[in-house]
Image (cartoon, rainbow, N blue to C red):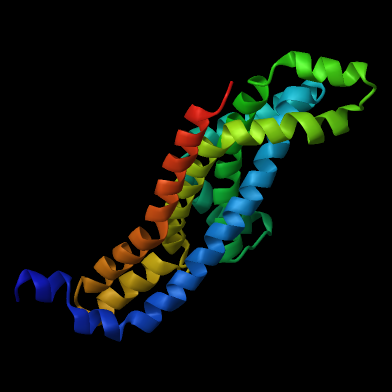
Length: 223
């Protein structure tokens, strides 16, 4: 067999396409769930770290440091395989969402912390002088500006975590990579893996370009 028949076999790719479509649906659902949950929890962690009483702030710092330091695969394996020893059994989908959301939230918290700290303190002081309460200051003044600053790095983190959904195959989640691996075993041909790689590229490349677009906008934005 030549290179094309081995790695780019169109007949094999078409034969396993239904399997890959199922895996793609699961991967997209995973990525959306992780990005939404991780982003929200990350912003909450950032606020806890910066504005909560010291015990809560230290707890937030500990969570951020732990999940930034631990490899994603370790977090996923612990949640899926270790929690059943404590009577907690989660599906592969839920385990993956929790594990990757925790990791994304840690990086999101740091990104938003930098964004919040980049806002001149005079703005919040002026808002307090006008009688605005802290939650309103946070919602109307701090978070909108922090979001603008944090969007490029946060988008980059989201692209990275979307790729890391492939780790779900470790816990038998039928995501795109798992389906491609099973298809490779069924057909005795690596073409399904190449097809999966092409699908990842088609989906994630626009997101990579979106990161570059946000970075260009930020570099032109007035300080």
